[in-house]
Amino acid sequence: MQKIIAAHDKFFVLAARAKPVVVLLSRVSLGVLFAQSGWGKLHHLSKIVEYFTSLGIPAPQLQAPFVAGTELVCGVLVLIGLLTRLASIPLICTMIVAIITAKRADLDGVTDLFGIAEYLYILLFLYLIVDGPGPLSLDAVLRKRVRA
Image 1 (cartoon, rainbow, N blue to C red):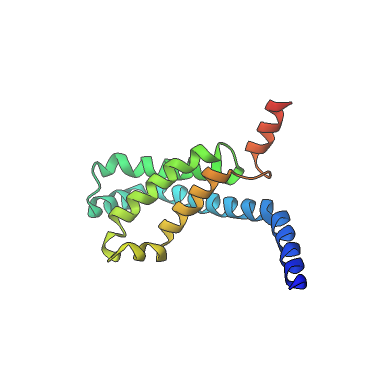
Image 2 (cartoon, helix red, strand yellow):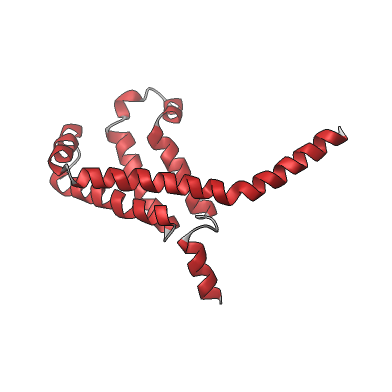
């Protein structure tokens, strides 16, 4: 039993050391994904307006560029780790709207949420809001400078 506890403790120490890199990889992945999505939407606005219209989203001519810009700007902010907590909030909102509009037909119950990417993105953004962007971010650099 002693060996199991020692192995567990070593693993816990290694996992704690890896946390900044794991948070960085998660944040960068989300940032790239949303920045690319926003960029793509901005370059194909007419198709996005059509899609939003088919989903019954009100004022699709206004919503499409707004969502595209939000995804691009907030995605870049998350990517570089600047204002990460704040930038995560509008991205969560876009994912909630996506679930309500585009994914609604795929959901028969609450447990169906667990299998869709939009829900997992919401959870990752919530994690970033609660725990922050990690020490390998511009937020951390700015925090150090402000304290100095």
